[in-house]
Length: 343
Ligand SMILES: [Zn+2]
Ligand SMILES: [Zn+2]
Image (cartoon, rainbow, N blue to C red; front, top):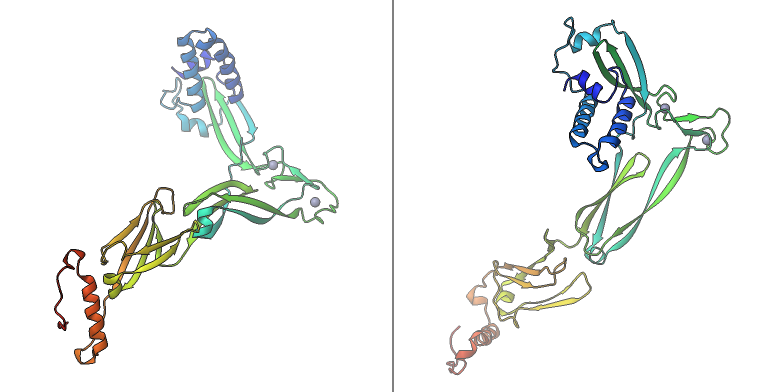
């Protein structure tokens, strides 16, 4: 569909502005929409015409007359019809700044959830002596649309300029003395922002509150504050790495871990009948940080320095004998150990 056809489909002249185009499309769409009993093919055609006018999708078309390309047109002064239209941006397009807040929680706090309060101090324009600019929607600039046409040729160029009404100040100030802001044009305010951190909240970015105060987004992060021997895996397992003595790895090791829920979890490798090594871990199901995850104990065995033989006394030898006896598996206890056996 050529440009002229597109405008004709919408019953428009070639110099119609964006507002007229929208209005014409809406009117025709109401009549021809298939849901309203209209003809589907007609509806498709007017929709295509509208889309192409919206996107100004005619650049590839050959100009029907004397060699003016789109750029010739732009720099040519032979326009028969020029109109300038000032429109307000629909929304503020200036980017907000981000306030970062990180809550460093103990595992207990993170497990149970916490209610936090943040007090955000900032300044806002004094509403007593100023009002938002109605020309630029209080964003300080406006988009200027220049609609130009010459015979069949027509195009729209847009540019952004400082709002002429408020001169970019975003607000319009009333003349005279202001007792509220003392003519500073701004007042100090404090906003209390409540943040509910749910139970078993994950580490990292928790959420972003858009425009928490004018011009600022609030990004809330969570980190866990716990001892070095604890790791919380991304899946929510609690991994505890214990450094234990070599002798404990063989004869048993006991520890109590206070779970973030408050429950004391006892670990006794003697009752588990296990000898520990650096590769062995003990897993307790369902006691992780997240629901249905695991509590995992891992071990680092401190290797002993061997004592020179001449420094070992009789008591130590007797103790070693006792320990070795205790190590013999149950199924062999019917055997009689020779007495005074060398160790
Ligand atoms: Zn303005
Ligand atoms: Zn004021």
